[in-house]
Amino acid sequence: MTLLRRKKNVTGEIVLITGAGSGIGRLMALKFAHLGAVLVLWDVNREGNKETGRLAKEVGAVSIHTYTCDCSKKQEIYEYADKVKKEVGDVSILINNAGIVSGKKFLDCPDSLVQKTIEVNTMAHFWTYKAFLPAMIASNHGHLVSIASSAGLTGASGLADYCSTKFAAVGFAESIDVEMHALKKTGVKTTIVCPYLIHTGMFDGCRSKWPHLIPSLDSEYAAEMIVNAVLREQVYLIMPRTLYIVVALKNILPVKMIRLLENYLGAFNFMDNFSGCLKKD
Ligand SMILES: NC(=O)c1ccc[n+]([C@@H]2O[C@H](COP(=O)([O-])OP(=O)(O)OC[C@H]3O[C@@H](n4cnc5c(N)ncnc54)[C@H](O)[C@@H]3O)[C@@H](O)[C@H]2O)c1
Ligand SMILES: *[C@@H]1O[C@H](CO)[C@@H](O)[C@H](O)[C@H]1NC(C)=O
Ligand SMILES: *[C@@H]1O[C@H](CO)[C@@H](O)[C@H](O)[C@H]1NC(C)=O
Image (cartoon, rainbow, N blue to C red; front, side):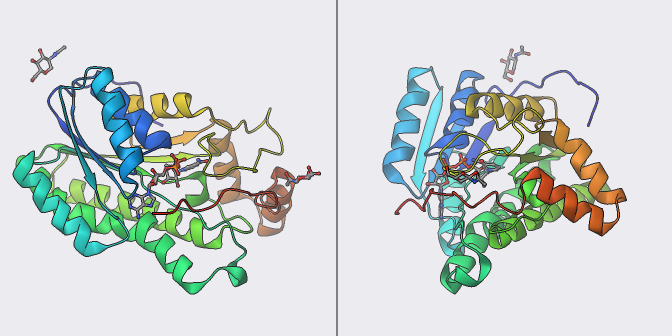
């Protein structure tokens, strides 16, 4: 956790949000619109993305650019990145938010779905950084935001594919942050977001076993927390707060006790009643 800094001014900054067509992505888009940022919205879901653009206009966005980009495809990412640079300019705040979850036990998950999950939740982060980081380094100005998950800090049953991609997203974003410091490009900021269950529909059917201890998050609250973390240039955002304790315990307790704790907290059965499914593209 970092000390509270002043909120930075994002007026005129070019903010790219992947997965802007629903959930947290849409809510963040509306908040950045309100703050006067130029919006670049990517989603594989054209209709959802258009709707986000329309809502952003309603709240007074200065400039909105929507693109139907499938982030599971490297070539598409590079193609749309070039388009954005030509049509809008250099992205200064990159928010990797697009994500999918199969919700299947590992051996029941088709190979193609495992691969897709890795492409969207992890590889897209590599390719978007490749596309937009050079300009940030050149001007020593920018912000890389990774919407990972608490599933990127601790494993869970029925989430092997998802957890792997989120661990990777955390490791990738953290490494690039270290690299920026090594290169003395400290004007390029990083924010790594690890939320627990959020009510967006992505994890329909799942619930917190101990809602008083680890409450699930309202999507509006989660988006507000994320945008504030970006404005204050906070590097890590883990929510709800009690997860900081769970993560600390995980690093100091013996493994047997960790498994007991995980079972107690519901990590064995979290996905049992999962009813969400991949939206068709
Ligand atoms: N909902 C939760 O409980 C929760 C918890 C922790 C982290 N997260 C993460 O937050 C992020 C946002 O999730 P959400 O809850 O808003 O879910 P959501 O399903 O509402 O939003 C995800 C968006 O990503 C888009 N998307 C999916 N595949 C894509 C692709 N190939 N290319 C481009 N866009 C694609 C979808 O169309 C959708 O608009 C995800 O990365 C998710 O893993 C969610
Ligand atoms: C924020 O930045 C914009 C553009 O650079 C500037 O016009 C505006 O006055 C700034 N706002 C504040 C509160 O500093
Ligand atoms: C799944 O649903 C059943 C029936 O409603 C309930 O008894 C059970 O506790 C739920 N399991 C989890 C892990 O939420």
